[in-house]
Amino acid sequence: MENTGKTAIVTGAGRGIGRAIAVSLCREGYNVVIGYAGNDEAAKETVDLCKQQNNEVQVVTVKGDVSEEETATKLVDAALEINGRVDVLVNNAGITKDTLLARMTADDFDRVIDVNLKGAFLLSQKVTKPMMKQRFGRIISISSVVGVHGNAGQVNYSASKAGLIGMTKSIAKELAARNITANAIAPGMIETDMTGVLSDKVKEEINASIPAKRMGTPEDIANAVLFLSDEKSSYITGQIIGVDGGMGM
Image (cartoon, rainbow, N blue to C red):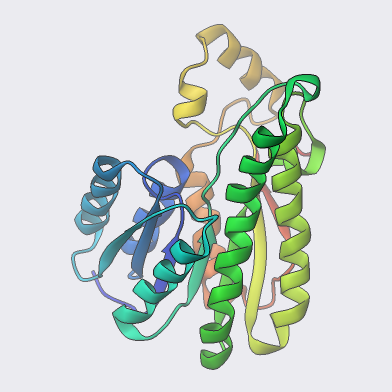
């Protein structure tokens, strides 16, 4: 086990995909700042899992709403306090408020956009200065297959995830000359708490519709994040990488 001297921020890291990303980064020697919205116990579990993987790294938590600028500032400051660097930002925090368009309230729409898209904007903006100063950075946003193809009952969520794709491409164009890459990952159906409530019959139907014939795991997404975080991916920017078992074909 080692500490690479690099630091990553992962939002929405209390559970699910965000937790898997944080744990994987720690295993590879990154110090990690864990952003989470409210579940203290879940955040502590993530910290414990990280330390089990690598007790040489520093792991700190920041609680708050990523759609608020104060929280974004706290997350970046926490990373800088570790070793003066912010090497990787993973914009993973996200919520859903699913319903059909005819029933969706303006508040339902605004809240999802605020957390999923504005939160990523605020964090991406605030890491830009330190990344430019160190002439290295990786900004990785977790989009979704529905941000590419849309989905009934998810107008707000699909719009937020599509917005991440457009924002990623724009950031990539602005920062590429400073050795800062910006990419997005578009997961398909992933085994998380949200899919865990589905009946076995529904899961079977979903798996039958996926070319790989299975749902993905949070670790599948984490593996893609590790690749995009590495210096070996330095010539890849502005890309949307589908981790979806072939759903996007």
